[in-house]
Image (cartoon, rainbow, N blue to C red; front, side, top):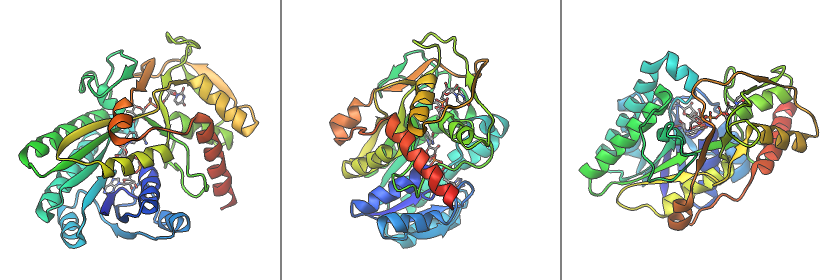
Length: 334
Ligand code: NAD
Ligand code: UFG
């Protein structure tokens, strides 16, 4: 298939583009480079042997989007582009609704105009909110007690996609709810390189390991879990990327939702230990107060993706730590 990947130079997008090319798809990328670099295209070329055609464009610019889609002859869109920092979304809600919700509406309108019927959307486990279930399958309710505007945007976009699927009988929509993506490409050429001060556990661990952050703050060790720290479902980004290829092969009319996770929880202390084991170095840590909005356990039941897409996560947190360290070493060499 010929695919347009919005946000395709980003962390998850770039890994997915590599897997799509490896599976014989033709991919073009649209990104405004607000959180990624054009040099990612060379990295993709090095791994996959193809430098995807690139459009430096913004999903908020409907005219640009529409022209690219009308001229591109695409079979499908994979829509990764958006803003994703939870804390920033509390401070700048309008920017988040404008880019994530407004931008997604533009993507859908441009698709309709160009006669493109297939879309895969990057949603998030955050749509399940805080229901205290611990493990979530796709039947769990969404939209309840969502902790931040970022999460609200994902929920709203899902609702918009579902409405469009009702309005357009030929529309094929797959919503993928990612749990906690971590890790890097085993080549060391692609990985997560967040601008500014990171918030997520693995990027913070990376900065602590390089000495850029003096110590890892553990946000609470008094949760009702075995070791007192929060438990999440960390999924290797290469597994996640492969999930998109499986989803593309199995698209059908209507809107379908799939969790992409590992069915397995890892605590903050277990993650620190896994990284220390992989690097052979101790990380300086300090237990501090709980972070507002955190829940003790938030993990996937991803059986539906296994059953219907034939997809299953194959890598574990040890693989992710090894590949992250390899990426860091590669970046340090320049
Ligand atoms: P990322 O920031 O690395 O990638 C997003 C890309 O979108 C970037 O390259 C950025 O430059 C681009 N972009 C942002 N605004 C744009 C705009 N207005 N027009 C065009 N391009 C724009 O993030 P990621 O981790 O690769 O996430 C990809 C998608 O997956 C996002 O929608 C994110 O919300 C979702 N997601 C991510 C996680 C996670 O933990 N990484 C978890 C769940 C869902
Ligand atoms: N943590 C620390 N110290 C840090 C950073 C994180 O102890 O410096 C802990 C957090 O308290 C949490 C765990 O590590 O218990 C994981 O935190 P992340 O920020 O990496 O991940 P979250 O599960 O909190 O957030 C993720 C996504 C969000 C999404 C949310 C809900 O990053 O986009 O899941 O699904 F909204």
